[in-house]
Length: 233
Image 1 (tube, rainbow, N blue to C red):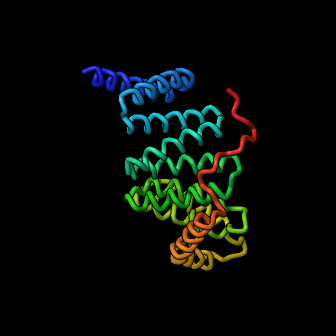
Image 2: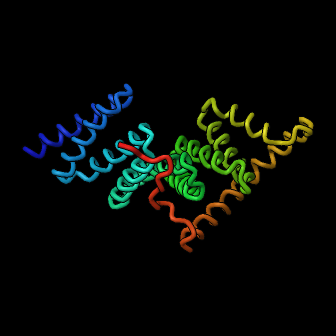
């Protein structure tokens, strides 16, 4: 009975924290999330603990504290892996990728985006694929792997089109804008068709390259972020 009461209290606190975060009361949200986390840990509710750590991670990111956000999300991911929570882990990889990208940790961001895309694909979460592919495109554009970034944007565009998301048109315009201005409309259309055909193979090769780099220890997707413009409490 006591466990049930504390679980109910923890769930209520977490819900209140989410409402406060949406209302931009970040300090109030942190108080509620911290209290919920303590209760989930007292009663041994690992899923509740993971969900609250994820909430604290996204809150820290909103507060401009990427190092703390990354650490909390990584702790969340460790629990999700133990629980075999594939849906939760895919989402957490997406958050981790975005935070790594925001502080210029390019290789980590690439690896995390790659993992997120494949995990979202495995659970048929096309909205997740759209966001993770879009993030990968942003990370890669302007680098020596810029073409892979364009292929990632094409995956995002195609996925948006599949689910009827209006950003499909905007992404198509971005991709077209990255092509030579000297192209005729016919040549640009042919180039876009070729990109659509080639993108899956290009991305598959990229994912394989990421896996090889992780296996060789060249990339650690989960290495703690270095405090640049540091987290200050």
